[in-house]
Length: 349
Image 1: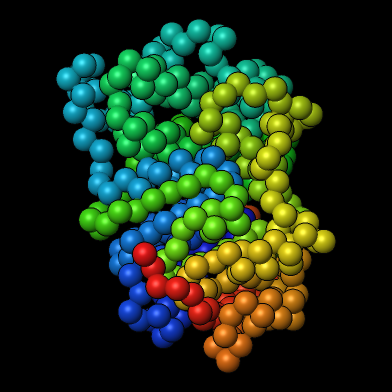
Image 2: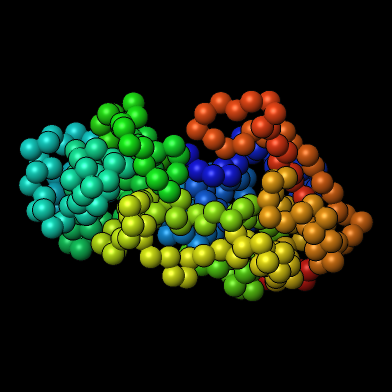
């Protein structure tokens, strides 16, 4: 999934830091999980806990981190004769979609030309509506377990960026159709790693969560700048919630009460970071941050040395291309930084 600050390209470097500093660790916490790419990657070796304030992120985590195997959909097959719901949705013809009542077509009525916007073409928006409404109906009828429900919603969400008429985020849509917009929307079948461990996912403020959980490795990848993530991914948030929100403005933004991150506010980012470090009951803490972030390297170093063992503090510099939808020039490159510190904490209970 195209996502601001995605760490897919940095996974090996993060693993190298962990191998060097925490070779005996057994658990890993991704407190700002985003697309869940980091949590899924480290699930191969660790018991994982993950969290994000955005619900669509929680859905992705719940489907692929807390789920510890591919859902079987046995009851759905027994009750409705559908063995593979992903194939079922991807194989629907347009006449099948048209059976959905107009009042249930939120995406088509809001984010497509029929609703005056161009995030998606009309048919793809209707395909999303059809899938989301059907999954809700199956859940209400008792055809899906909780694991199966979250998996299907995650597959629906994951497929949307592949046909979206945007430059990667949903702060605006293009006024003419991009090539990807003409593709037929399909659910994206997400892989699920089995590790046999008690993995857990959360959907809340990270600072609050850290007062209740503990482990070995805490990975912190907060927002870097003033762009609130909900405004950039409101379409995906609505796809996950499917709560028929009252949208506003040309871009159709949804309400954002309770979903604003202090890390996106210049005067609150450092205090929020200090609160995380103070509450953290993890002996190994890794922060991923960018040189164009709201917090300076000096502020980060001071905070980590204050709440951790100063002699263990270290910075790893990694050349990293700025997330953009086009190729960038060499002069536009920036540095991604990994910060490490060790903290004295009571043993895990």
